[in-house]
Length: 482
Figure 1: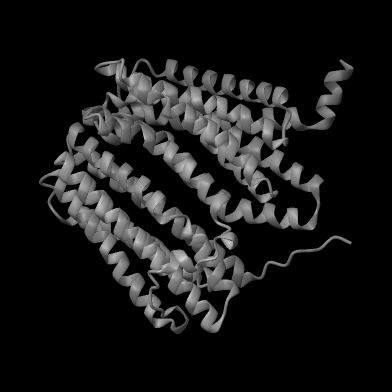
Figure 2 (figure 1 turned 90 degrees about the vertical axis):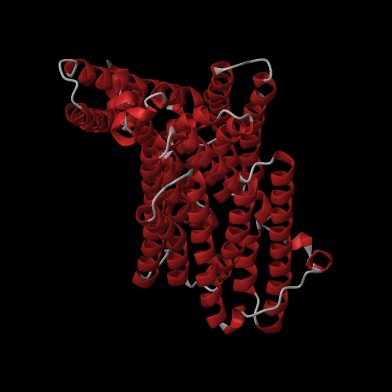
């Protein structure tokens, strides 16, 4: 007898609230980036992008993956046991925050670049606020979580809009102020919950039972995925190529727009659903669901990738103005990351949900290692050659990682997947190039955007028809008969 899952309306509404908060945060982050790119020069925007990349990397490493552990312990423990465990985890989190601050100060003193201090200070504040979010997750308090998720980006966007932007350091100060606001509000909400009031135990490293820590594998997957996306900008900023870092940041932001939205859907809706199917032991349904979601995700991602390549100059100039037109060329080379990142999300979380987290880490680690190999190669290049090495390392490493994911996931036939992917890419390029050719008579950005929208609609209709035709059994039988 199969187990039927019940999904109460209250839980559905709370899940929708959390999903909406994540989508709003993503939108506000993108909006802030667009506004700042229009206000800052290419070099200044590159400096800001470099600081933001450092912040993300420091936050991931400094957080030690404890947010998931805080959520687990808060949910499972009660009374004094919960207080003791939260105190130990809080002490460990505050200790890591202090270490991050000290390292940022030392890096600033050695390099005479205050960017490291700002990135470390912002990461320290974020790490503490994220600890509180994890505690609320353990208590299933979705409303405070949704509120805290939106605080920092909302504050940042509001201050950027109101305050005059005199230099990149003004942006740094606004960024720190928004993180501090988030910490203050998070602390206030946590203090109102008696079960979350605890004193930090700074000797937690000796007392914690590390064998019970379960966040390692998922933390490793998130760490590798995020570090992969921000490594290029971080490397170029470290080498002093701020203008190029700004252009690459713009290109990566545009190619990651779709993955930012799909990532929220995959982690909040698809992953829990796959975990539920796996717990029922229905392997056939698990495989069928994974294949269907993968194919639909690939359909959407390939269309976006094709149109990003064909309409790269239009997209960059309309959103970021002519000042950053140089990013269009880099975006053509990086556009394939839209496809690879979206399918990476589906394949990785499918393997984690089906109890194969170690297999999920393998392709991610290989992909990251191939990207890191670009660093020694940059020592033999100069000028734009350095940027070209970093940019080309992305599609090469992403393609190899994708093939390894298909192999380890075992959810799809690699040959059939390759044929399906090639057909969709051919369709996407054909639609994009055809609509672009029809618009050569006009230099208007409005007409170009209209062509882009029309191309997207044509691709969706044709792509869905092609997907149905290839996956419909009767159509395949008809092909065999003829």
